[in-house]
Length: 221
Image (tube, rainbow, N blue to C red; front, side, top):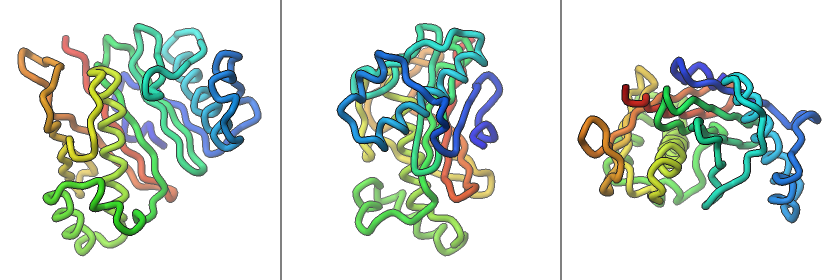
């Protein structure tokens, strides 16, 4: 399903549960040895999806240990992202020669709990959320906004090593095209074509009770 919002050059693998063949390498199992069973299962299936994607790239299915703040440490030639929510796990990967950033997120297509929208959004974002709630009432636009911001962070942090909060990216959406743009509101340490890279764009999808978001930034040629 997530492949529908990923561009050529990005491979993906997904699971709608935790298959018994989703096993961890010894080093990975050590990382989650004290975690609850739910966490161990989603961690294992996410890594299983990622290794399947590595094989699609022609690379060995190596252990994938978390780095600082939990982001996976990919092989040197790879950029990628893992996501999981209730009933869904996925990974999206690309060679660094094809993409400079990849970020994905999955969320259940439910309204956010009371008060969360105000905590994760900027005033101008709440304006379009309210407008689209009226124009397109079948979509939980608050949850979509949350997912888009998560995808932005997952694309941004591994490349920049810069933590950003919900208030540090301003999201706009094109409801008809199912696309979005994110303006990073803090100084960017990344240059693209000689200028700071402070705008990311991506696609989103609502299907099967899920909200999916994806960003893939092509590498400079």
